[in-house]
Structures are given as structure tokens and as C-alpha cells.
Length: 101
Image 1 (spheres, rainbow, N blue to C red):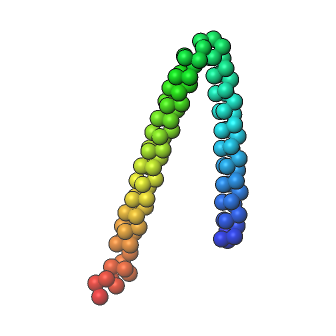
Image 2 (image 1 turned 45 degrees about the vertical axis):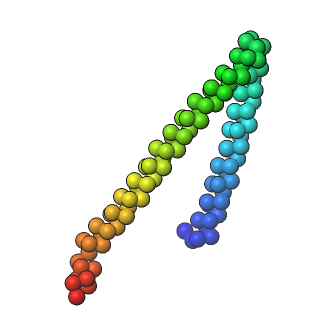
Image 3 (image 1 turned 90 degrees about the horizontal axis):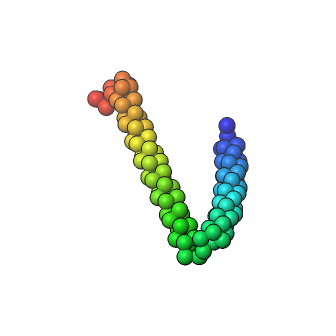
């Protein structure tokens, strides 16, 4: 695959991910509005607003936790790859011979 093909593929995937994120945002907005109207009619404004804020806080905590876990996984993978590259280089007899000379 050439660089041009890889760039085109990455651009298409990024555009698709952006469209999915936008659709998810709109869907979540409508669901939250529907839940708010339901809570407003059933319990009134004093109860519906803090409940919505609490739900969004919990969702934010879950998203932040997922982000931290994923960040640590990527960091561990990068360190493992770097360690593997050093071990491969040290296992190469030509490299060791060149280093000794």
C-alpha cells in the first residue's frame, strides 16, 4: 500500500468516525431531552434537573475511566514494542559483532 492509499484510507475512516460521533451526539441529545420532559412532567423542575446532572456526571466518570485505561494500554504497548526492538537488535549477531569491533 502506498502512502497515498494509506492517507486516503485514514481520511475516509476519520470522516466515518466523525459522522458516527455526530449521530451519537444528536441521538443522545434527543434522548436526554425526552427524559428531561418526562421527569419535568412527573416530578417538577426541582427534581428533574439534579437527576439529569447526576446522570451526566456518572457518564462522564465512566468515559474518563475508559480513557485512562486505554491510555495506559497504549503506553504499555509502546514500551513493549520498544523493549522488543532492543532485544531483537541485541540478538542479531551482525550487530553484536559490529559493536565489538
